[in-house]
Amino acid sequence: MVTEERARRGTARTDGGAIAPETEEKELGDEMWRRRLGALLLRSPPASSSTAPSSCQHRRHHLLLPSEEPLALGRLARLFTSQAGSDGGDTLKPFIAFVLGGPGSGKGTQCTKIASDFGFAHLSAGDLLRHEIASGSEKGELILDIIKEGRIVPSEITVELIRKAMEMSNAKRVLIDGFPRCEENRIAFERIVGTEPDIVVFFDCPEDEMVKRLLSRNQGRVDDNIETIKKRLKVFENLNIPVVDYYSSRGKVHKIKATGTEDEIFDAVRRLFSSLSRRAYDM
Ligand SMILES: Nc1ncnc2c1ncn2[C@@H]1O[C@H](COP(=O)(O)OP(=O)(O)OP(=O)(O)O)[C@@H](O)[C@H]1O
Ligand SMILES: Nc1ccn([C@@H]2O[C@H](COP(=O)(O)O)[C@@H](O)[C@H]2O)c(=O)n1
Ligand SMILES: [Mg+2]
Image (cartoon, rainbow, N blue to C red):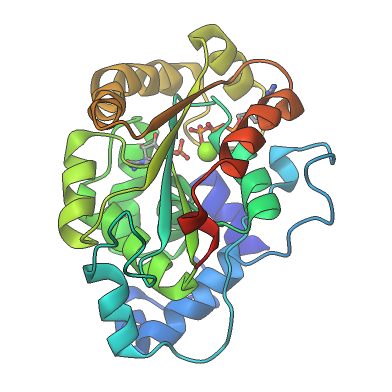
């Protein structure tokens, strides 16, 4: 998949191929988004991912797209403007889990397993940004420059990509991987999407382990080099940890020790997702 490969590498598309320029995309609207996201993210989960060895090279992003029918506009509007109470009064709001952790802590690896075993859509903010780069849009050029520097993309851009992906997935349970990265991200999500996460999963991993993993990830990402990694770690400490603290103070954070094998970590993840309230699974 040429587009997927470019998205992973964070390189801009130059061949004017299957993905239309941004202006045309706007005209094509929701249907184009459904197809773009489907191509990028819709993958069948592996038959038994909890035991299969997990490799980033073969990671599959599992986005639940239940039908090819265009979504009714009224339903979309209600889905993202209504707040569900803890009594589950509004069954339309998806159950949202933000998945946080430092660079290389294993967010993507574990999200793939959760998506497969617990029926969550997996939306990775980083992957959505890399896909925008691969589309060749003007916005993509800006995003590429920022990612190379390990800085944070303006929240309006990222939240809009996430909002559209959520709409198109129409999923009842959503993992939002690598978001929010800073307070501005968090506030923009609440304002634009109009809701808060139900839970926040935080993968706690020592820096030296994260650096080791990133330097051997070998996916050709433009930010997997020691200079950018150092910057990303600083951004994580200075901007992302305050978001974790904010959600901790609201009792939403579930901290998971992110050392050990992928399967050992997933044992703890599995316990958490098995214990979620019925609201997560009854929708
Ligand atoms: N428990 C683990 N032990 C060793 N390597 C791991 C473990 N979990 C994941 N990895 C590997 O570490 C690398 C980083 O993992 P992953 O991409 O899931 O992290 P991430 O948190 O999504 O990183 P980023 O924020 O950069 O996207 C990958 O190559 C992955 O295969
Ligand atoms: N909310 C976000 C998420 C990501 N970015 C940028 O993308 C880079 C890669 O993200 P990963 O989650 O795939 O590691 C990250 O370093 C940021 O530059 C962002 O700006 N905002
Ligand atoms: Mg990741």
